[in-house]
Amino acid sequence: MQVLFALCGLVAVGFVLLITVYLVISGIPAIREIGLFRFLFGKTWAAGQDQYGILPLILTSICGTAGAIVIGVPVGFFTAVFLSKVASKKVANVLCPAVSLLAGIPSVVYGLVGMCVLVPALRNWLNLPAGDSLLAAIIVLAVMILPSIISLSETALESVPREYEEASLALGATELETYFRVSASAAKSGIAAAVVLGIGRAIGEAMAIMMVAGNVANMPALTRSVRFLTTGISIELNYSQDGSLQRQALFSIGLVLFFFIMLINAFLNLVMKREKEN
Amino acid sequence: MKKLCSLALAAVLAVSMSAVCSAKQKDTVNTDGSTSMADVMGALTEVFREKEPDITVNYSGTGSGSGISGVLDGTCDIGLSSRELKQEEMDQGAVAHVIALDGVAVVVNPKNTVTDLTTEQIADIFTGKITNWSELGGADAPVAVYGREDGSGTRSAFEEIVGVEGACVYTNEYGSTGDVIGNVASNENAIGYASLSAVDESVTAAKVNGVIPSEDTVKDGSYTIQRPFVMVTKDGVELSEAAQAFLDFASSEEAEEYIRAAGAVYPN
Image (cartoon, rainbow over all chains, first blue to last red; front, side, top):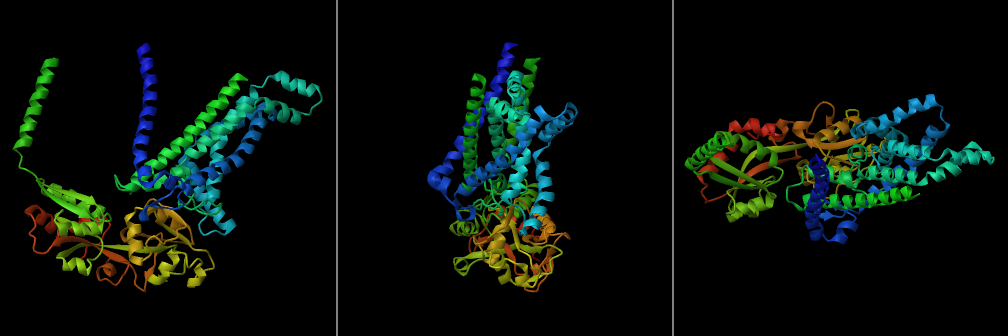
């Protein structure tokens, strides 16, 4: 029996190793041919002209994720405070399942709604030619990361000892002061973990933003069409020739993305560890 | 039981081995060239494999130029080119056999009143010189330029023929022809391009220099956004029997159906 369990554990580890090794092996040749500096900091991505600079893609991924965090974290955090502290049991019983349902919606559906509702709306409001833009992607991503931010922050807030809040209230602080100064402060590493998890989800998303971002490798600007690291891979994979530099460069983008996600994961582990120690 | 199984397996293997050995040595035809012809070549080789199982047709997509020089240097049997041959190539003995024509339609939203464009206007739109439909006599609305991603055959065909290679300023890029048509159909400001065979009623195919794009206008050459798919051989070099059979099949009427299915126009 023990062997079976060990084997199951090994399968997961094995796949991680396999993917890592495969990505490194297939990602290195293009970087070597193009040159690391020119690959990471080149401003033009045009496979047709043999220009493979992914700076616009990297910056877009960073800006898009940051934008989603700026919108998603306040909304998610306040929702979490509302759910765990303010809302009556009845309201919470309706809202909680709704939040988990939001987490279960497939990303292609987010993209579809974004494409059919958000993009035309932005086109009309801002008088843009198309409406597919970084802004649209940020809004979609912000909604997509809400569930993980809400549920993680809520759990962190729930686990704050009741005595802390009671002591604060007894000292004359209002309820709001108590929630934001005492509860949130006690739960801050849990909330930080929620934010990092949101970043991880946002930077790895491809399908939904491919449908609303427009996919031209421009430098990031709110109302312009942009290409993320993830969508950069998926949009060109189909027609890139097997073994060509273009195909290899796509794997290199994957390697860069992998590196970003490892960085975020390491950071998340650090945050979680600190929370445990507290 | 186990022994019996392995014995049976060994027998099957032995039989199949001898079957392979006794089969006639396969002839191969090496074709090399245009990546845009991948679809047409895929369709043709697939059918040809069923017709002549003893002949293997290899296709490698390296680009029209290297396909033509390949056949001139004798490194492949048939070169594939998605442009007409240049004079110097013909001087070196290259012979063109046009097997199909590829038309690219410029599509706009059905509500757009601008439906007749010159090649120059199209180039200006796609390079970002014209940014508002009013400059072309349409509504006062910004132009949304939709195209395909780098590596797409339609994109390279369109940019090559209109003369805007690498100079296009796209508003959006999409991963498939269907996406381009769908998004042009849903945005009144949009203009895009798509293989002629994929255009449906949800969008308007604009006239180019006054000519409506259709199979007929592509065939008679009056619709200019088109290019030939050419099989290239070398004058004075006799093709192998297998290569000749493939070339004959590709230019026969029988191939029409498959060339059409691959999205190209049959030339005759």
